[in-house]
Length: 262
Image (cartoon, rainbow, N blue to C red):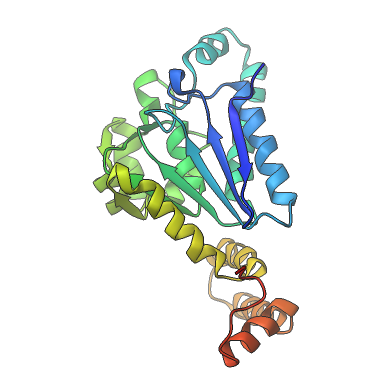
């Protein structure tokens, strides 16, 4: 059976993970969740990978849960539903916790769990024709396992509206809310993604991983003695690291650092 998640890695170390179920609007089921989680875990462990791009083939980015899968789940016991929910939660956690910069290229509609995938990525660029909906409440459900990432991305106040109403909102509103960082014409999406990849590749890979860990540490913590000490230790460690020394030396010598490929 052909894979429904495509993976390619270019010579620069940019990995592109592509959802490939266009006939089903890239909706995911247990198989897609397993494939996507496996692909991301492998990329996380690959030192040659610098940037991970999440994309999709066809008109839709992802319609969320596959209808056939949902029909099967309706007949599941609570224990079986819990196992499925844990698998999806694991996917979201793997994507959000990836120690590499992640970039979502949203070419079309993203609903339900598809919004969760976007929220889990560090950076998101959308076509101006893309649409979004946290549609679970219409089905008598809740956007539960994606909620930590969506609330973090757009804030609790916006979630009160869009979780409770399941309204569809456009790319401009997604930009205003902070779900995406840039909106472009559909024809410009690939170029915008390439530009962002080049920007990311100019930065130190170890520093980028440390930046992600730093954000997770300080996001909700109090600025107390422990926080201040932790941030001081983090920068001291990076300054003394090989990458930190190389970056400062390259800046002072007016040359590109070693991690930037010609």
